[in-house]
Every structure is written in structure tokens, then in C-alpha cells.
Image 1 (cartoon, rainbow, N blue to C red):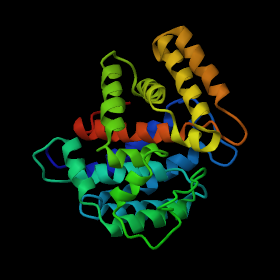
Image 2 (cartoon, rainbow, N blue to C red):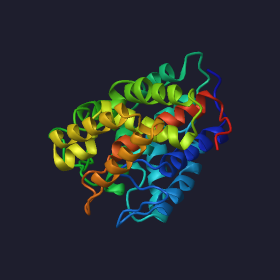
Image 3 (tube, rainbow, N blue to C red):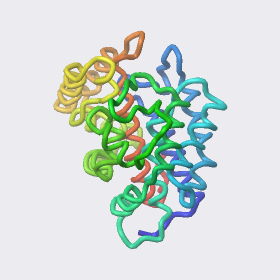
Image 4 (cartoon, rainbow, N blue to C red):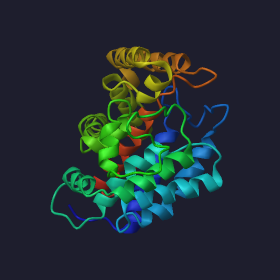
Length: 288
């Protein structure tokens, strides 16, 4: 793997965020659909804001990248727009900047194994600052507990059963590489536009991995029902058929409630991670 320059790492992070929010993913903020407390422009601003933090990501500790990205985002945006994305992209960005002979996934595994207690403290600070909805608590390691004495990977491993972002830290980004990236590459081979491919990738992840944000808000049974529905949409063709496209719109309506309890936000974060890996491994090809 050829290490990316700092500029390219930052660009990949920003472009991944922009592609993710620009795609018409069911139940999420998009170019044409806002939430009552968060709008499309908030996500665009957030994508621009994280650039400086990710330009230093190759040389900085992962925890430092996380807290700096969240701090600058909060300066411009009132709500939590990108905590999950930042948590996912920080170790991937660190790995992308390594002078490493292995593929990116092996490199990120090395990064994850080297995470420290300081990384955990900074990440916990970022989580508290972002104040994400539906966090709940972890009996042994509550993110609001500042006296942290375990590494960031150990902390994430404790949370793996109830948060898919944390699960990625424990599994060397299994969802990102084995489901998200695999689906994205397969879909792009069929000569579709990038934004349409993002929607299909989103459905592919959601169908296989119940969204943990929905699970924390509404329970795992509801999250599984949403995943089943995403699978049905894929069976109908998804973006590749007229019927599938109609079902995507119906799914979108189903997932929009006033309090956003059915928002598959964690799935959207995982899509951004897959997009970042794609951009890194394809040397930022022209996409739009």
C-alpha cells in the first residue's frame, strides 16, 4: 500500500462525507430531505470543517483526530452531524498515511491494536461534546465517565454488541470492508452513477446489519424489521428497477417520523467509511 499524502487523506474524508449525504438514502438527511433539527447544509459544513483535522491524521494520535474534528464541527454546527463518521474515519485515515506494505485493512488492524488510553479519553471527550442521541450507557464503561483506564479499542469492544461503529474497532472494520466496500465495488461495475451506488450500498449494509441507532431508540426487533424491509427492497431490484425505486421511496416515508427514531444513522456512517476506503484504494478517481 502506497501511503497517501496528507492532502489526499483530507480530501478522501471530505468527499466521502459529501457523497454520503448527497445520496437519497431512505430515512436520512439528504439534499432534498431535512430533519426538524438538522439540515443538509449542516452536513455539508461538517464535511468541510473536518478537513484540517484529517490533514494531520497520518501523524496525529487517533484520539486527537477525533476530538479536533468534533470540536471544529461544533463551532459551525449546533447538532451532532458526524460523530460516527469521525470515529470510523480517524483510524482509517491514520492507516492510509502509513508507509506500510500491507493492504489498508491490515494497516488499520495495526492502527487499532496500537490505540492507547489517551485515545480513549479523547474519544470519550468527543462523544460527550457531540452529545449524540440514543447513546444510553454501558454498564462497565460509560462514555460520560472521564476516569478512563482502558484503551480505545478495549472500550469499543465493550460496546460492540450495541453499537456498530464500536464493533468496527473490535473486528478490524469487518462491515466496512466485507459488506460495504464489497457491495460498492460490485454495484459500480454495473455502470451506475456514484450517488445511486451509494443508495444501493446503504441498502446492502442495512439489510445485513440491523441499524444500532434504531435499536437503541426503538429496540432490536424494530431494527431487524427495518433490515428485513431493506432486504425486500433489494429483492425488488433496488436502484436497478422501477419497482425497486418506488419501494425505496416507500421505505423512506416509513422511516421518517417526527422524532427520527427510525433514522438508520449508523448505517449512513458505515457507508461513509466504505466510501473513504474506496477513494483511498482507487487514488481519488473522478466520480461525479
